[in-house]
Image (cartoon, rainbow, N blue to C red):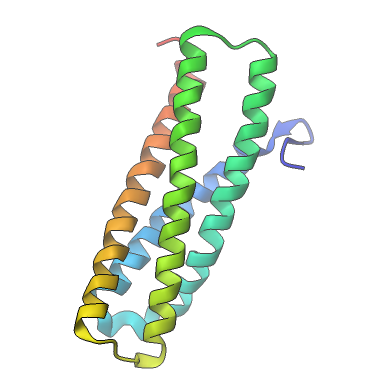
Length: 157
């Protein structure tokens, strides 16, 4: 199921969704955290992204593991294998950070839905956590994509 579709690796087909959704979730979470007056306007979009993005990252991760297994069986070695292992590590970290961002974002959405007011300390703490997780998730999706491009376009370099 996560290996190939009509001979194409599923990973190559789904990774682009993660590349789009992770920055959108990160941006939406940051705006939701730092501009409370916009929350009623963007809450549905951020909620949908907070659910879809971790799922997309999970599918990308699982399909990447299938592609990794296939590539290793074909005999990848040396520096190319090291680049592939680096990419796998970044991809795994991306998934966990995005999952954390999605969960924290959903918790904040539930606690602030319909203009509910949180105590200032709780709102500030939740906002800081959302922004930090968004920055980390953005960093790791970048590192994952960059290392993946190295695997594809310059595996020996």
